[in-house]
Amino acid sequence: MAKDRLAEVLQEWEAVIGLEIHTELTSLNTKMFCGCPVAFGGEVNTRVCPVCLGMPGSLPVPNEKAIESTILAGLAMECDISRFSQFHRKNYFYPDMPKDYQISQYDIPFCVGGHLDVEVDGDGAGERADRAGLRPSEDGAYTTRIGVTRLHLEEDTGKMIHVGGAEGRIAGATHSLIDFNRAGTALMELVSEPDMRTPEEARRFAQKLRLILLTLGVSDCNMEEGSMRVDANCSVRSRGDVELGVKTEVKNVNSFKALHDALAFEIVRQAELLASGHEVEQETRHWDAGAKRTSSLRTKEYASDYRYFPEPDMVPFTFDDAYVERMRATLPELPDARKARFIAAYGLPVRDATALTGDLALAAFYERAVAAAGVARSKQVSNWTLGDFSAFLNANGLEADETCVSPSALAELVGLIEDATISGKQGKDVFAEMAKGGGAPGAIVERLGMRQLSDTSEVERIVDEVLAANPDEVASYRGGKTSLVGFFVGQVMRATKGQANPGVVNEVLARRLAQ
Ligand SMILES: [Zn+2]
Image (tube, rainbow, N blue to C red; front, side):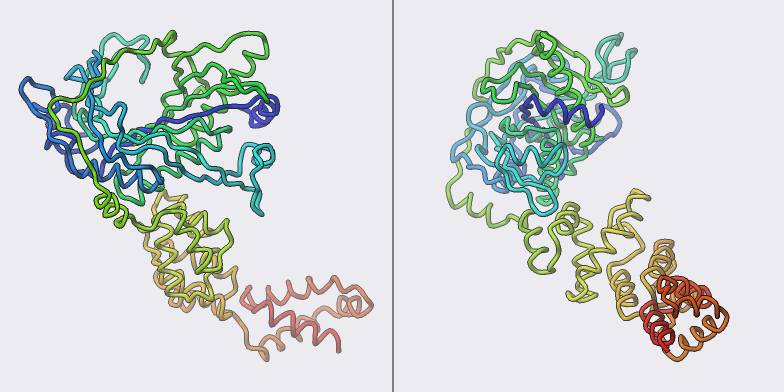
């Protein structure tokens, strides 16, 4: 999908996007209504019991921690917490649900009516901000508020494995196998308002939700392993139209990039259909990340009659104000607050604070490094954390707390550069050694003989040698060709194997050449 094509389409058409995000509460030790362990993988059909297999006579016992986790997530998104709530049975017949109904929530979810603020800087951010009357920040990003309709709790289904067809596709499969290990795992479902207008806004919303849930510690939010699953509803309409277009639901997006790309494809596809006089069919579509396209999975979806009724095996829940306030008091520092603190306490630009607080391990690493280096060096520490350190993490698929480079070591490196023991360029070489497990930066500098040459008399001696060896250039310089100063700096650097302090070299050269 060419980015330009999406931008072109968005000139004439407006996309309307809503998300449904299911998140498994993987931090719980047990499933939603029984004591079976929760973990990814495992020998099939071993993490099961009569309750999650729906055996006659078995009774569900609600997991208190799961309800707490959901209410905490709701509070983090500034939802209203229902003072009365209950579970319902959603009746349907499908092999992945052994009871033939799913315990879910219907008209009274635990949490309703919250929002997430997301910063967006892609997919024509400037134009979108103009149209919506949003004020972009200095670096071209804008902040928009996306409504959260509801947040409820339910149990996950088992996993179907379709054999004999293309992976993940029902078409072509000859038979299906079922693994019930996942059945009954606590699953939190968020439904957003259809407030998103570009694929980038949808991606940022999902990323923000993930960051909040990771901060709360309720899930590992692993999209590849399916503990966070995003379905996107998307329609387009001519700019200026009020009526909504026919929407499709896109499934099988297993990464944030897939979410963005699938929506970009879908917006262009729908706009082109409508522009050529065709209609969009209401259907579920499957994203094929390899082919980079969506294809029809099921058409003619009728609103199913799930015959919801209150779960008779469980009493309803009531929460008083004191309980809700007690929960609110346990909320940790949330991403927006942390970002604001990074800007205020460390004097960081918005861009730095956003990048650092967008990753929990990186933010923690940064805070420890600044504590060691001193707040006066907060920007330099940020530059190194987001620069060489992050590049090293990305190249090796590591988190900030999984490396041999400690926060105090990075602080020491910044100190060596700031006090001119080594140059910034040498710092990069020292960092490369640190990343290889080469030890503390000070020791590396000594071992490699990198100590920067800042001794003025020593630099003067070398400058004099360079000037004496290049009399023609000296004459040209004194005749007005001052651009030759770069040549002299280069010669001095070569003579000192790059170890001369550039500031001292420039100062001495200017002094000597003026004589
Ligand atoms: Zn069980």
